[in-house]
Image (cartoon, rainbow, N blue to C red; front, side, top):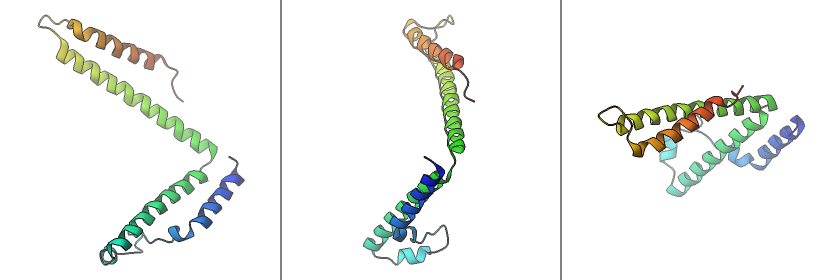
Length: 133
């Protein structure tokens, strides 16, 4: 999506959702908790729904305002974080298997050997993967 297309999409979102974007938020200080408390249940439900929609639209507008480089960097950071989380999860799982599945002589019980092999294979594959830059 080009820069001009993104700007056009932002303008379209703003035009189509002008009423929702005018919804006052407590976090902005435009409406007090007392005012919300005085609303009827129907008004309050409508206001809450509009607040949710407004936040979603603002998030979408922020995403459209990002450049392609920023989006690529964000995706790379996300993938790197997920990979690191998975590695740490597998290391914890490996330690748990070892703590639960060893016999008195220090060897791993047979029924835990296959699980340990699968965990070690996945760890090895993750570590050998090309690092995300």
